[in-house]
Image 1 (cartoon, rainbow, N blue to C red):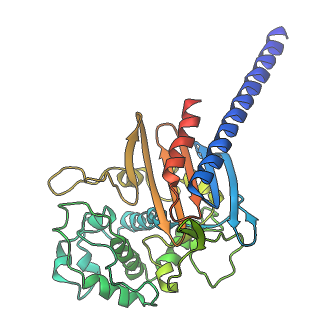
Image 2: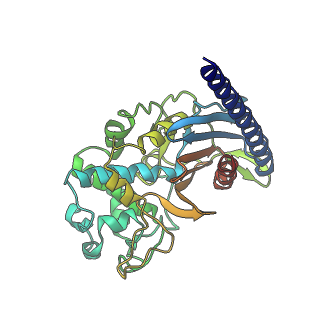
Length: 355
């Protein structure tokens, strides 16, 4: 009886100590986030911290919509920017697992009439930005509506910047092409494929392709700074908000579900996830210069292994950092195009890792 009572007291004391420690960390996080938002002039921010797939902190700061004075909350929906590339890469790896495509297949196999140079480009190289594909050309009109076929024709008309597999160079057009590939192979628009195979199975109810015409509950507005003054985001055509290089809506609550799924094999086998989180090699056998996998960057900070990615689009900046060995994930979503969410994820993670 005495042992049981002492044990119960010990458990209560441990829980109390843990709660106090958590409260102190949360206070430090709040103080830092608010200070950084003021320093960077960020209107609104959503922060997610999760441990081993379970939410530790999900909180909104500032304004989702400045004009209407709507506060950010965990349900607030932000644009993804290039953070969306990890979902495109996951879709491609699903098709690889199903035997519908091969990582080392030449992409010309799936694009009839493609440039001859595409015979030397593999799906693996598109995923890892080592294919020689470039970014949108300087004269590209972001306010014009294009069909998928027209966008593909533009990509096909741009010569490769270097022989495939010899260098690394970030390419939004490479991921745009992967979205078209998914459509060609499955017969489904890549956004519908993501919805059916990833978002719905994980109950990611707010995650979807961008549509500024649709009524989207809790949608944040995007902003930019012009000579120190806050302005609304610049407008782009509807089609350019549907491409596979990063045109999604999501909330931190949905990203918590995504993070939790990555600890399991609900979507992909562990071997496929490990390949996505391994630095892709060039043809000479050396790792690519940016330590990039498939839709994820891989790096080490103070001895901690991290996989993550940032995003920027239409007045939004986002970042996810998954501390693999620590089973800690930090996500920061902001609605300012000049914000530095990666800096914030780093500092918030350091507070929890110190604990």
